[in-house]
Length: 161
Image (tube, rainbow, N blue to C red; front, side, top):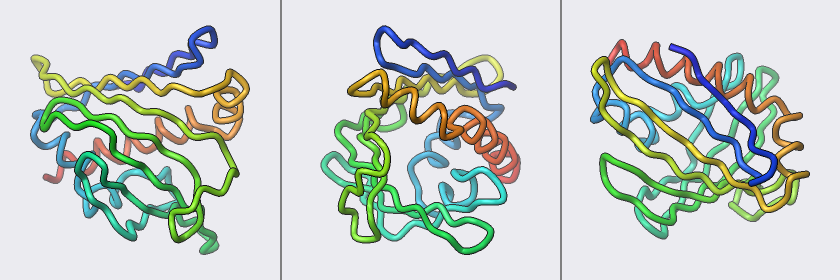
């Protein structure tokens, strides 16, 4: 199963599509429970550590991506809307360890949709940026490669659940 990432510069968006060989319930949990997110979200050799998570409308996920030398990059996702088992939206940005935006990289508005398929679950993600330059900056940071690697981690985790 391949991660498809299409850049739509005119609309300042990235469209990500990925199918997973697991039912929606398992895939949903892997995207919304911190103990599971920590096992797959970062591309190896990086890992994710959740500091706090409140998966509810108005809640937030504060986490760090920890590198092989112990370096940390903090991120915060603020949840805007949630339809359990089906879709959610959030705004994600780099921040400090307290969740204060750092301005290191642009914020991204995520909209994720989960749907059943004959062989598992399809996840459709639209990531919207304020400016085309912001989209280009995230692509240059290695988003496509890193997110594709993380999806491979998720495949491994789902096989164990």
